[in-house]
Image 1: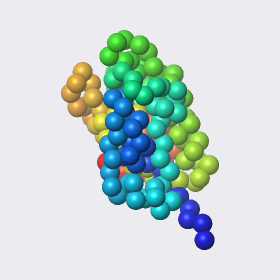
Image 2: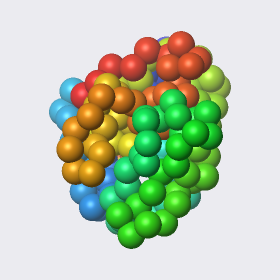
Image 3: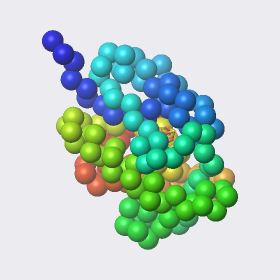
Length: 146
Ligand code: SF4
């Protein structure tokens, strides 16, 4: 019988070298979930069209909710506005979750896309969600930080 995926997971947790610095954040339990067909890896920033490696980026003001509601932007350390790519990646991630009827997401904490509860601002951790997490929470997808 074909296994039905129950989770979306940040692709870098599944071992994909998709982080801004070209590395992964491999988590053995997540790798196993993917191997068993129980989880689908997604990298919202790659889905939004951003390259690997890429410059570090931060949410300018507030958190991902403010980016989703167009009150804030995502800016790289070099000053480039990548808000549209971040929103595009978040929407594509949501569509994948809806297509597979997935209601749980293991997210890599502290990222401007996947961060859940904590994100970086000027190199310091502050309370807040990344852009993709903010959009998924709006649709009642359960977020599990990793
Ligand atoms: S966007 Fe998410 S999945 Fe992609 S590298 Fe960053 S934390 Fe990992």
